Length: 601
View (cartoon, rainbow, N blue to C red):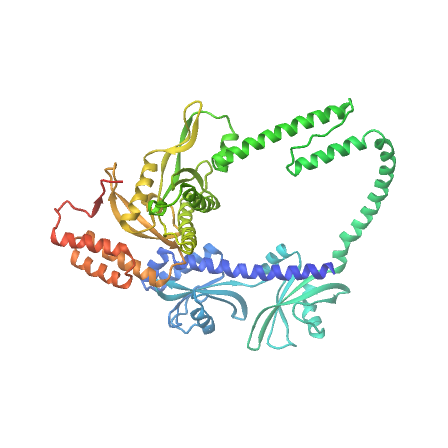
């Protein structure tokens, strides 16, 4: 029964490994699909150049074959048959499966020169699909041995065009056993995913057959096997060891118990009960042992420890409510002193709009309750993404990513937090509408910069925070979000470190207190999750922005008006329509470079 259960689990692991292998193949193909160098090679339309690029990528990912197929299923280059080109793709069903997939991808098992390959197909996007990339890995003994390392079972892969003609093409069994396996299967009645005994060379193997591929008259199966005698060996050894341990333990327990129970059992049990309560977090009850020996001294020390733990938890709980948990751990882990260090930190500023309107004609108690509900919800979003709430400034929040805890993707965590905060505010607004309260809007500014991090204040009162010009810029970006009609604005330094997101370039600006212009962006969403319609709209917008900066204001106006018609709810398009109209009537001097200057916060 244990072997049956283990084989069922192994079958699940086997299927998962096959799925993960497909996924890795797809990821390798996607990498090539998005590789600029390969797109450049493809753009040459030179078969030798494309073949060289394919072979280079095939060597890098250790694939066995790669093909590039035109969108109308004509082979453009094949590393397995480099001299053959301009022939129909021999596996049209793969292309059909990819075309019917929402991501344009497909995976299957195919045969090349009578040898099985695991092959995936993904589109080459430029940016629309212009060709198909096919990557294949040979399914052979090495493939089976790699799977055996993870499943701890013998694995044999067989194929057949009928039930009576099984052929083995990959196996971890010894040579003499693998020859007999197809014969045993043909003589045995078996069902998919049901274990059965198979006797090969007088050795009983518990075997389970799982399906790998089935199409038309062709089938491919995997046979997972464990030797029954080998599986029982640990059980037999364990039974012998347990019997010996039981005998020895019984003798020692009887003799030792008589000696120890008279003087030690009761106080030790008392201490054990006390330790169990401490383990459960109960520091309110002390242990009482009246003995004056070593156990009595141990009990006194134990009670002092309970008192110290209780005081530590009170300090930790209180500090954790005043500052974030991460900051509390930072303060408790070292000696507290004034000062700081330079560190690259991503700073997030958020502020509610129209909160003054919400406060009108409402009691301070109701306002505080609503504000606490909002701050609790968005603070949870910050902490869920690995950020630290530095401080609350009324209805505003300042959050840090990179201090005191540092991650490799702090900038992306901050952007993900901002998007989740907007989603959380939408949920709160739905509740507010049901209660007859006005909706709230939020502005968020994010900047990544080198700042000073540490404890700042006086010798008697300090605050763990960050200061620097980069912090001020994050606050300025939050203020600009309302002017551009967007919820989130990030600086160019944050955008450069967030390769996992798609951005809309908003403007080149000089904020108050600065003399150097910076480019600001609006995050649209995560890469791979943006629809083609939105990407098309973004391309049209960036083209209009290019016209605007090149003083081609008629073309810019045409493009922004077209975008406004397509998406009338986007205030940004109206913003640039107004700016462009003003420039058409009042052209600037030749030093104008499209930079917007703001003299207010």
